Length: 299
Length: 283
Image (cartoon, rainbow over all chains, first blue to last red; front, side, top):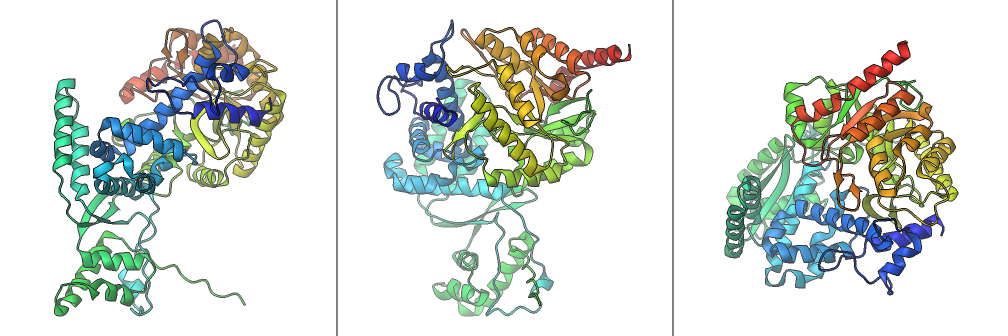
């Protein structure tokens, strides 16, 4: 068997879902018996059959990837419950196997996949989508690129009609139907302090479930961002969100402001002061990138 | 022999793997450590805390990069984005050499994130060596390939693992990161004498040595990096040092990670073997 053919054969088996008892399936990819499939390319030894040797890799694959998603989405796990989350992750990995050299990117399609497969969240779909979005935004805010921040002097000759401001890549904007920022912080706090006995841990899990069940819808606008290499969640007003969202889509400042206040209930005379305050805050937090110098046209 | 073209003519001593639970201790206590090995993929990102920590470590310590997903043995070409990011990191760390595993782990763009074993065939050796050369030419840095622990063997194999390793490194003209724990684990899983392995590798190509602990199950041994180094592994290390001389040595401890001091103390046990190799050379 040639190298590529062997690797495809083994990868199909390694990536095939485990049985309900978390062992390798008896059925081979594409049909037939896995024992025969394994023995075609893997040697047995005096202690392990070909099937058992292949099974070591099959189980490692699934345990490793499931563990990675569990670490990245503790909030979603808490919303769906341990068992449902586990089953959902298995289905997700089948549909969206890793296509990156790093496991960091494994959960990048979680929100869109869940939206396309709502049965996994049932009645909690809206909440599950919100928490999945927040948890992925958290990952991006943690290690996305940071460019030099905008300074006051960069705006000296700026014209609001044409000025376009770029948000830092680590600033993620979320419009959410549930206050999942509170939920995620609570989940993390419990995970951090979950060091005692199993009985105590069970109690905490039940408390978790109760907290999730009690969570009422409440529209919030959230920025997930980074200061001094730590990620923070900052709630903002609908107007702020509208300005930032418009700017992030590349609209000039004047149009972004128009869009923000078009549907706002804020009295007109307060707009100018509000905008000034927004920009002071955002500039302090370093959310905008310094405009790149345009290269002079070559002669 | 220790400083050779496969480790950038450096003469590093005993290092340990840089791991998150030790960051605080290292940055605040500044312990004396010869060097740290980083997992390249953990720092092939665009920003944030990991890179800030790395920069702080680089201000004080020597760092060598070790990768887990280049997959020299995968039949298809290396991912360009991976290579680009790796090169950026190489520029940042100024690592004198770079290591990754003699294994495969991806096919048709899908990653297993595991170190899957190679079939020991001449075709695989040729393709693997070609990829090592391509990566080295792109990164412009010496490459060392590491032998992995394995739990399966293939019918198509045409040679032993150590013959395959020799075939690859000769064809690629690259170095070896000799993991003596992996040799021990595989020897137990595949019933061979680990000393035959250590005695057969081209000692002049050894750029670095890994030591680690593992977990023993009823029918096989798993390379878990969550225990101290056991005596039979130290014996293999001793033999490797006798053959290769005073070589940069690194202890891997990746799971159930104890305190920094415990890990470092375990690594420093290598000192007595390294010291005896220096004495032997002097005599």
